[in-house]
Amino acid sequence: MKLQISNSRGFTLVELMITVAIIAIISAFAFPAYQGYVAEARIGTARLNTEPLRLALEDFFLDNNSYIAGSWIPGGLQDLQTGNLGWRPDGDGGNYNYVVAAPAAPLTIFTGYSLTVTDTNDAAATVTCNRDQTNGTYVCN
Image (tube, rainbow, N blue to C red; front, side, top):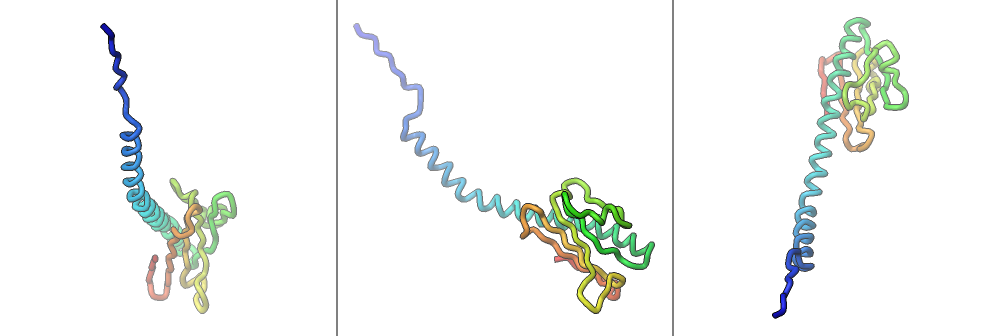
């Protein structure tokens, strides 16, 4: 009498290839959607990061009757923090470049400013806000 030992405790190569193919197909659809969500999140974070700086600029305006220009760039120029404004980003704000500039002529820094926040990892995630003191408007795009 012969004893027959069966080693059928695994997956066949065909089963593994089918599983890998299914995962690849699902990934092909999911990855672009994920990238879109990441891009939207970066733009949303950039938009949220404008608000504390806007409030600091408005406080500065109340005290000095003018706005202040400057920038805050991670690892670079940070005159919004070291200058008269004394502002620095909170949380993940170190992943963004902040620039405050006077808008195009004839406006000056006394009548408004342009605030730009750019993600250091994705330049497409940029938010620009314009403040026009003469109209009392503040618009972000």
